[in-house]
Image (cartoon, rainbow, N blue to C red; front, top):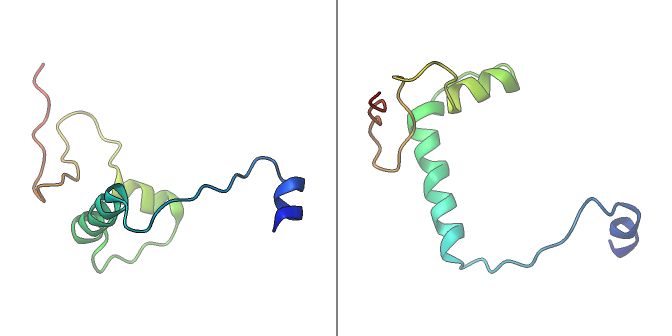
Length: 76
């Protein structure tokens, strides 16, 4: 592993605790994405997956939020 890392300086190893609070929040966030955008989805490509997770439509679209509900569009 050390030899491979020496040959590939673009990659770095970072030690993170598995009980870190940010890691718990990431797990919750992935659960929200799964429930709101991916549950029972049949996704054929990476671009389609990206479109399901982060809509690229103009303002007024809903987004995935921690509350589980749609986020209102910003007022102009």
